Length: 293
Image (cartoon, rainbow, N blue to C red; front, top):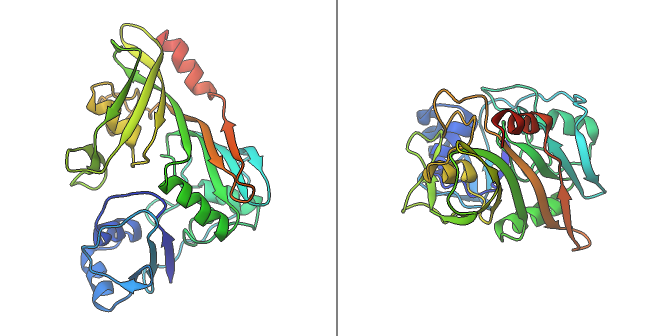
């Protein structure tokens, strides 16, 4: 049995999501629905059901679970108490493994570091409340128990979590700051997202920190939390992230220069608003020097 708490608005049909998540064929997914092995919030639903943030999936039968090994990755812990851990994730590290990608992930370090982790995200995602893309570095919060997990998921859902990034993108801006208010939906390929008037609300604010005739160094705050939101929005306004292999320039594929530098949230036990910050990694600083921004 596999259980998954949907901690972000992924805007996808349930059957499409499961085919990718479980990495099995769509006809096998159909069999699971026909035999009523898929539950959403403890109820049977149609395969066409569109997932919402906060939905709780139960898969009564599916592929074999992934065996996770505790590994010390010497990750920087910004803050830890009995309820949460705030980590600075390095670029290139997966958040959690999948059937097709069993690379070492943040989860390997978490289960090495502590046994106190929530299990609402499923056995392969202990403690995981939200995600950063593999090539995005920076702050991520981990839940140590299920009550904390639900509290944090609701904070993300209610948009009270402050999420500030720094990034490097192509082309200079005319304006010093701006707002990108363009809906986002999942692309028909499922592997990427796309700006679309029929999508879900997505709101991004940006401020130019420095720029030259070819590149811009930005501070970006996202109000919503759509998948790949910053990458999609900046690409849509013709300022794709430097190094982005999915939304950027084709030959520019070393991995996006995107760093989650600030995370603000209400402590799940004390209700105190806490702000955490992570310094720019060296690879990012070196790129700024290389591009002379």
